[in-house]
Length: 230
Picture 1 (cartoon, helix red, strand yellow):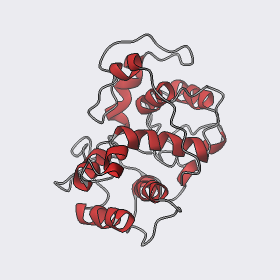
Picture 2 (cartoon, one colour):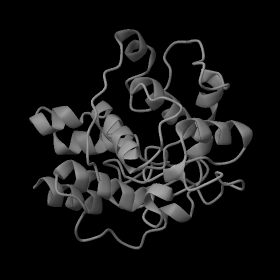
Picture 3 (spheres, rainbow, N blue to C red):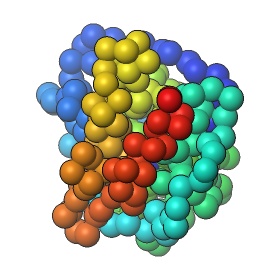
Picture 4 (spheres, rainbow, N blue to C red):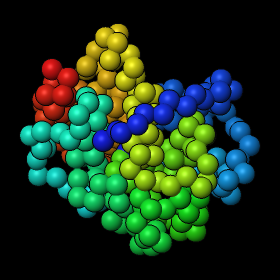
């Protein structure tokens, strides 16, 4: 499950690609497409791993309490810090799901996208959530296309933040910042991306899937968002 911004690269996605992906917050393919040449898995194979990857909490999700302040000069930076405090509080940009029996060949922030894809494909049947935002395989596949990321791009701090911002924009960050989306609506949409955050019912969007649950309650989530955007 998932997922400080120094530079935001708003790289557009073509209408044909945008129409292929669902818009319900799960980032699943709505129609069948041909696999991109930079990976060997078909889109359906990437997609099958979605619920498996979302299913079990691990070491990276153990958090006693939220920090009183969030890192970053901008509100977007601080929002990313909030997400990271739930998804990968201990290892941040170099976090890997603790249940991954075969770890990546090096620290995630030093690997290229191509190396991460190879690791995922070479180690089927285990958890692959990676980085500060615990990006899972089918979401990574989506982001590579959506942001036109090359296999040689390094999965460093800048790129990880860029990908997280893309997910937030998909969840309505621009509308929220413009005042056309309420804070409660935006919180629910973000919780639909990162399983550790709760919906209005205090549960994870993936609650009940092999023991998955929200790591904080809604009051904590709302207080954190209010501290950032209040």
